[in-house]
Length: 383
Image (cartoon, rainbow, N blue to C red; front, side, top):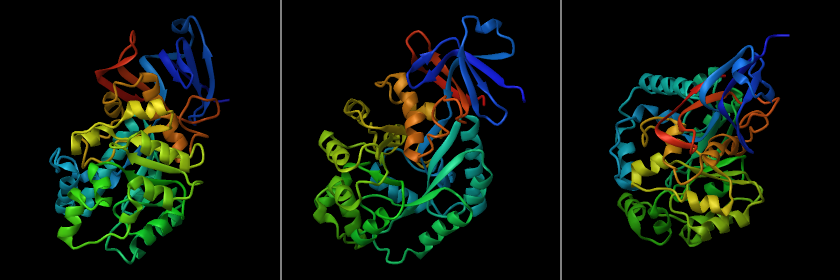
């Protein structure tokens, strides 16, 4: 039998709490074989000890790796409509080779910093060859959008290519404001899971009321909408998405308790994941997601980095640092286990459970007395 790799640290995170004096034993293929405790870890033969906290591999529940080439090209805090206009203006400036090189660089960096899996938004197939070879697991959300679109054959072809290559994927509407009624409903019924941008800006609710920046932007473009009658983004979700669908709602920056209750009561238990991307919210709107409210409601929450168009890095500790109101234990859960549950990969990822292959990540920059993240918090892959 091949020799097991044994590792330990000051603490090991588990869903039940932080374990001290714990030793993790991994097989050569990354499978966790055993968790044991010892009062004398430092004298146990063959155990590698690391200073910090060992956690399972991160699950980045929302990313746009295709947009990695936009890092540093978008101005901060221009509001959502200004952000969207900026992307439209600069997204064609890079060559295909430059775009792919950026995606490859950040794919490698995500892996090194401990990201094991990604819920990745795809508007094309350019990153698929990279993902076929990557040690990072990607669930590819093939995104349908366009208020003026009548032919989605190009997006259908992206989904077909993902299927041909054997890549995990599902079709999804982009948001409640970017597709007319018929295609939104059709796509919402097609695959599992869905990943829908939701309540990222005040303009999303205002659009249904015939006012605000998104509404004005549509008027300037001569574009009408046929879904205002739903009255709100939440009402559109409830009326259009079957209750047995697994759905990741992305951002949720401007949701309130009424919206949360309405969404949760529509879907079957365990179907909804509220994904927070706090650094992106700060970049675009100077806003902060209602993490405390969502936590108090007891809903499933995960963490994503969004894209480098609205972020400086794809660092999960970077996102966690912007949620200081939440305990470190729960932030780690959101960055690992609940993200794995959202993507349907918790059978092998998300927690240190014998038989799983979650990876092992060292989280540093922690005040071990108070179990809080310092400003220098960082992560690196151990297994």
